[in-house]
Each structure stands twice: as C-alpha cells, then as structure tokens.
Length: 135
Image (tube, rainbow, N blue to C red; front, side, top):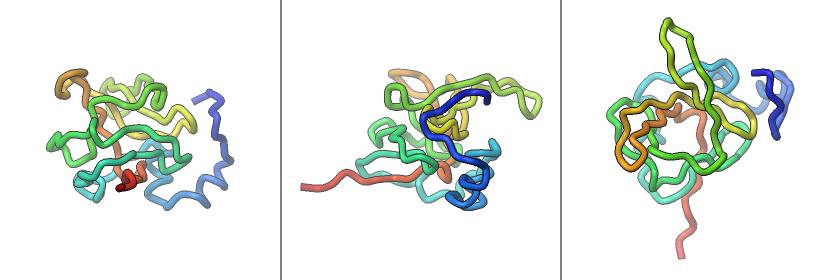
C-alpha cells in the first residue's frame, strides 16, 4: 500500500514488535490456520484491537460464530478499518486492514448476519482483546 498511516514503523521495528506469526499476517498479508487462535472463542464483553498499533477495531457485541475457524464480526467500529481489492490466490476478495497502521486483518464477505449481512473474517493473531472493566 502506498498510503500514509497515522502509525508508521520501519520493517525492522515491525519485526521487533510482532511475533513472527503476527508479522506474517499483519505485514505479509498472511493467514493463520483456521481454529488456531483462542480469540475465536472469546465471549466476554470488550474490545478487539489491532495487535500492531492498539487501535480499537471491533466490539464483542458485533462478534458472531461463523463456523469458519476465524473470529468473525458483522460490523467494525466507525473508521477503524479500510478495505481494498485483493486479487491474490486467483480470486477477487475484499481485504480488510487497520486504518491506523495499514496492517492486514483479513477479508470481508457478504454472507454475514443481519443487520449488515457482512462477515469480517479476521485473523485472531492480528488482534488483542481487552475485556471491559467490571463494576
């Protein structure tokens, strides 16, 4: 991407900040194995944030079980993600990336539940979860 983002780091800084798997997904547009991330089963109230920059992307109330093996959401927070056309792997998909750092998060499909009918299929390794404080 030839865009300027609010959060910008050198490749060496990204590699130092992220685990190899996080780097492969966020910076290399990779995909984690389905069912490999504990966040797929996270059910507490809270926020899902970009692991690269900490920007809040999704709230737990927009998360649903899609049966795909990746955390799925039907709506991101306003302005939190951007999309672009992805023609890799011989198909056309819509890539989802963090609007603050440009990190690759996953893809969005038009087979989700109401009210948006969208399924943001997000790599769990690209996310951090912060539970809402109780009391």
